[in-house]
Length: 431
Image 1 (cartoon, rainbow, N blue to C red):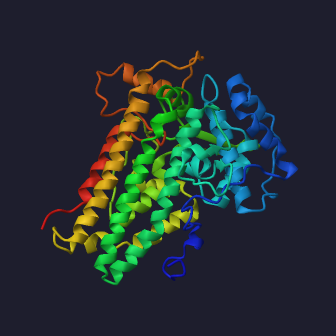
Image 2 (cartoon, rainbow, N blue to C red; image 1 turned 120 degrees about the horizontal axis):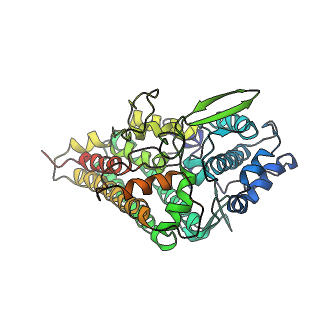
Image 3 (cartoon, rainbow, N blue to C red; image 1 turned 90 degrees about the vertical axis):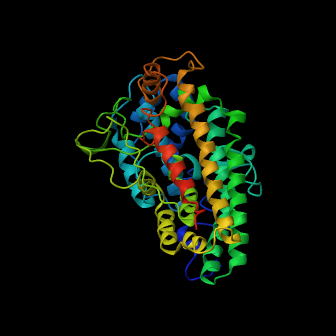
């Protein structure tokens, strides 16, 4: 099937083994020219803790991207600059709303090359930020994975990020299966469609089992107070201290204000692949009440579709191709409610709904409930996403249905619930 003219995975930078994950990413830019970046990256956690990160970044020379040779090197540069950006913005008592040109100039160039926005996307935090002691190890085991860059240096942060990498690795095994199912529909091969849908359902359930391992080594208070602030973007972050977003300085008084969402699992191409394959169409915008500047128009497209702009260009084009070819739902509902095809389809959709139930449970524990937990370490009070969320929760009457922003800028719980409900409603049990 890889040789099929309709579905050539390689042109979309998707592999049958790792899916949207690359082979083990480059961990170091070897050219000595980039030693200043790698030095700050190596000391990132320590300099954030010591309060010297902004000074270190301000002292960086203006480096060109001309010595980046391979796609792996461009990705490594993207990871480094994304971490520098978010550490610089959120790594002090007050957020910084101006990004120095030593970061913003190369970051804009690297982002343009990779067709990504200049912020800490899911690609920077997860897809391109992992390593393993051996390339032959099973990437579906988070205990065999580690990060190449870290804000906090905690096991909690590493586990949080590597859980997603492990889910991506497990889901990679479903991509070719989904493409084969689309071809099976075209051939009216009911038995193969049914068998494949059963395997897709089982794969989703196994991804859910990996997700539930989050509780093993990621403590809610550490995630919420220490890590989450650094994952926040510059969009809908008025209460967190960025009313205008972030100014990308390109030198000599030039630059522009930008507003980007922060890292979000909604930026996972794998999750959106499953939605598209199953025919799940999301419309929730997730716009938080009162947080959007007047100059910024309301979101017209659903937040899920908007998040495709935060995916690497080839992955985004894969989703567009899949959208044009997806045919499973119409095929399934053309069969009787008690048919094996319809049953297998509905079960796969409901498995996706249960997966989102698990995600809501984790968000409730790690954000809503964690917002009322004390900071795990004695720390200077800061203005960031964690403090603004805690303030909202302390002033609330216990209603957690709305008002808490996600790192992507959404009104978190209502958005997640609507996304879950839309997923489950896609299943069709009627005549």
